[in-house]
Image 1 (spheres, helix red, strand yellow):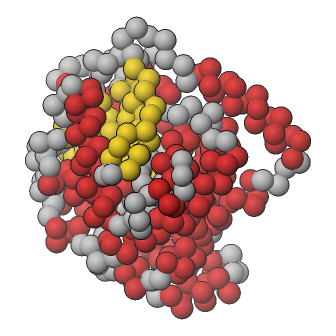
Image 2: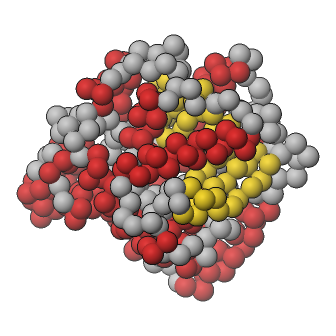
Image 3: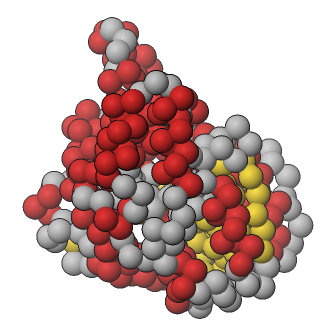
Length: 362
């Protein structure tokens, strides 16, 4: 995912420095005001919690503690969701939203850098951390289950958490849904090649051809190169990275310039995680889930194509299922269209987990 971010960084910082910093100060102040929770029944906790032997950043926010609890599992690896508070502020009127910056990501990494992450990050280590975070949230909020909301590479963890521990989760809601197929599906790879060729970028197309179509065989450098070209060759994805991903980080009250720098360092540090998932096969691991199963996917996603997510979803057996496309969105659909994602949470998910009618969006 570091390649996806790098694809847009230079263009995003091209404006005059004085203009950038003046605009930033005003918008960060406005976002800080927006993020205040004054409700007497609300909760606003943003702190470091000892998880897996190290201090990890966890945010628990919502206007009513009685609302269902959503636990996000962010993507990347290393692409923390902590910058997106202002974009998802409306969600906190209807849900208690839990954000966790994994070891090797976001504010957890920024606190002390690589030396404080407990060594190299691995898939298995992060999976155990996710279970510990889940149990921490259950205890802190005094609830029996939480809604699991993984995105992008976080869905690789999410599928396994939901399948192996249905006692902890009331529903699975995947977005930017990843489906590992041990290299069988090459649709995203082939589409990237086609976009590069159509744009006359023969050198970049040759670079993609040289690394081959099986992600399980890629080195870290090759994965970064592919991510950069996949995202950079799609105007909608590139626009989302610039305006939504980088824009949110730049304007977040939580992110100083030092923390922004650390965010990118964290993504490089976390590249080792993908090696632990290289041989995964989600079909072989099983398509039966004991909890309600939802996927809300960007209709135009070029990184984790909607057709692949839908094919896996169709094979899933679950007590309740729901699949929806988020129009006018590629990857990062949930933060490009947070209004639409909230609507789907309220109309498709909340009635199932609460047994009550959908509340109005105010």
